[in-house]
Length: 193
Image (tube, rainbow, N blue to C red; front, side, top):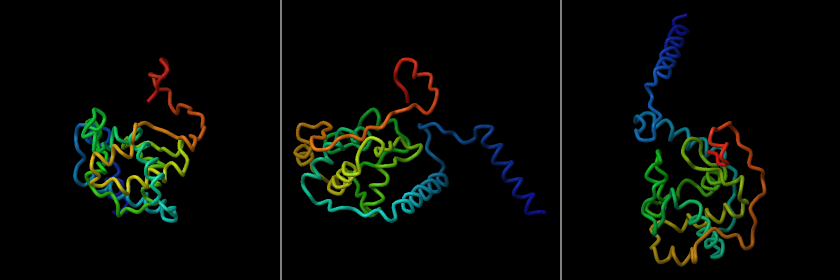
């Protein structure tokens, strides 16, 4: 009986903390340390469990890396930055901040984990799920590029992205209908969030 009362007390206390808005969800205020640790642990375990049996293809082909570089430059550099883009309005406003892959070694999490993250995105981080609009091949190309990005000089980055831009000369986007999942007020003028 005492255990049940303790559990009910804790649930009630948590409810009151939520009800009175004690936990600030603003992107301008950092999480509490314990919250960061818990969310990081949950994220890493969730990705690792779901990516466990994903096997990477050969990622060493130069064309694969170059295609991944072009897609990264067009789709990812606004948040994750690049050797030629040190900050953007978008990157400055994100919390949690997106990892800056050219400045830090992201490897060690596993190729499957990186693939899974790009394909499925991450809730409440700003990381989109690219698997709805890109083939597995295109996602593996981005993984191949990320494996080479750490400490990449700007000149090498520019050489890989070439004239820049998002290109799919030999591949096509997956055609899936985009259906809004909410009745966002902004949808009246043709755009949604």
